[in-house]
Amino acid sequence: MLRALRSLPVLLLLPLSLLAEVEYDPDAPPVPLKRELVPLSKTVFQLIHLKSGKERIVDLTGKDFILVSVREPGSDGRFYAVDRDGTVWWSGPVTSGAPQFRSPSGVFSIIQKKRYHMSTVYPDDNGVNNMDFMMKFTKWGHALHKGSVDWMSHGCIHVDPKDVPVLYRWSHVGMPVVITRHTYMPFARPDLRRIYGKK
Image (cartoon, rainbow, N blue to C red):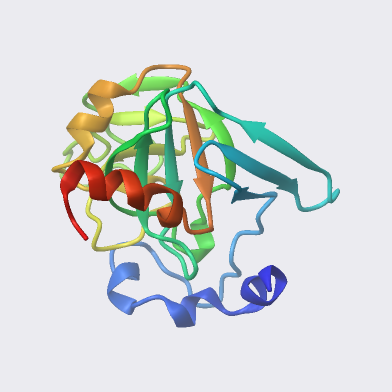
């Protein structure tokens, strides 16, 4: 099933409006993934290295972490803030990398935080900070940051402006960031219903 999903042209499954703000080249192939991460429970994940086929279990029980289920078919398009007691206490919409800039899958750590930041690779033409509330989690510049959830990114995770200040204040350098292409909502739903009272 997973292989069948990977072989589908991802572009045909995304609304065109989500690709509007990214320099989209319809002839560019999707970025190949190196890892796949599958949630097994609220705090336990299976990490699969796609080239070697090696698998390992990652257990984040007892740790605060941010989980992102990217905006792709079969995923939630949401972030989840998971407290060290295993409670999913905050969630909100995100967008992730367009097919030619796909966000990486795996378990990372926040390596840098900056309240005000402009991308050095994709700076705003007007000189406006375009990566405020930046929480960088790869050496290649992938970060969670404030951004529109109406269009796809160059690989970063755009967090809705109403949610990102809360996530930024709670996060810290070294905090795990889990990126998956699978749904996490079945694990998060009971906590979110209890906290927010939604059915």
